[in-house]
Image (cartoon, rainbow, N blue to C red):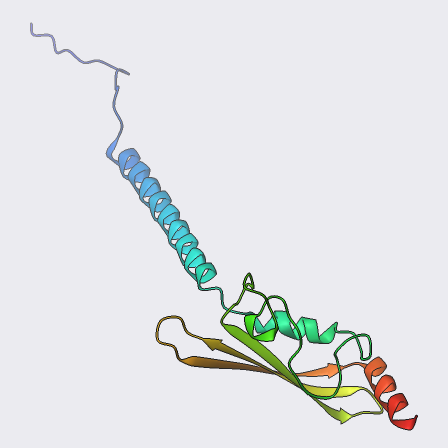
Length: 154
C-alpha cells in the first residue's frame, strides 16, 4: 500500500487574495504620503514668494484708527506701514519692493457706509515690471462717519 503524505492544517503561507489586499493597502498609503509631500512643497513655494495679502490690508483698514489719532479718513491715502518698503518701511520690511494705498469713498456719510479700494503695487525682482493688485469692499464704520460729520460742522 502506498501512503499519501497529507499534512492537514500545516499551511504556512499567505493566500493570493491576502497578498493582493496587502499590496493594494501599501500602494494607497504610498500615494497618500506622496500627495502630502507634494502639497507641502507647494506651500513652501508659495511662502517663499512673499506676496502681500490684500485681506490683511483690508483688516488693517477696517480696524484703523480715525484721524487725528490715526490715518483713516476719506479720500486717497498711502498709510505708513513698516511691512512695506513703499510705505515708509525700513530696509527690513517684509515686502521691500511693494507699497499700498487706500481710497476710502463715502457712499452714505451719515450712516457710515464706505466703498474701499486697496491697491498694492509690487516691483518684480526678476524682470523689473510693476504688478498691481486691487481689492474693493464695503466698509461700515458709523464711528468714522460721526468723526467726519463732526469735523465738518466745526
